[in-house]
Image 1 (cartoon, one colour):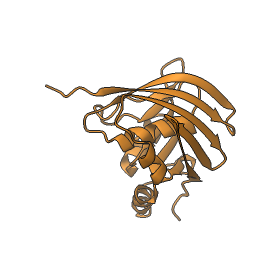
Image 2: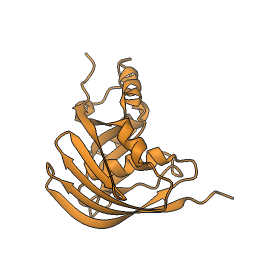
Image 3: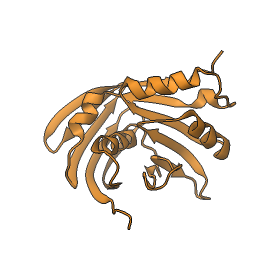
Image 4: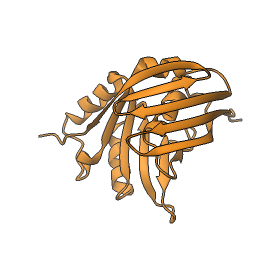
Length: 187
């Protein structure tokens, strides 16, 4: 029998100045039994950072090959695909090849996983005509750790300004830097 995930509810107030986003809504996420609280928190921060209409959580770790976050158009075509925590070159190639025109972003908590991806890309085995369209985001790992709480309900007020996230989580204020870059095709 498969283990059941738990449901986590975020009462989210989001202001993303650069994207012109201002919303107040409840967001429900499923925490897979094998998913860490840090990974769920990273997915939630990615949702805030990259918010766009229709962006939702993917099916989660129980469905290999699915996005952590994604958006679809009215025909069901994937328009945005976001990987959180780790990203493998083979998976990125598959996403680019099977979802023509979809925006692709990878969000990391700190430099280690991003460096692993870049080292894998430096081998030159990964090529795709849309290679330079992939966005890389890195969120301060201390922010992710500070927000990773074992609770089924959280109240977040998030403000995104430039390269910084400001979060008030259940009355506690924390903040952290965000770094954005684009992949550069190997020479």
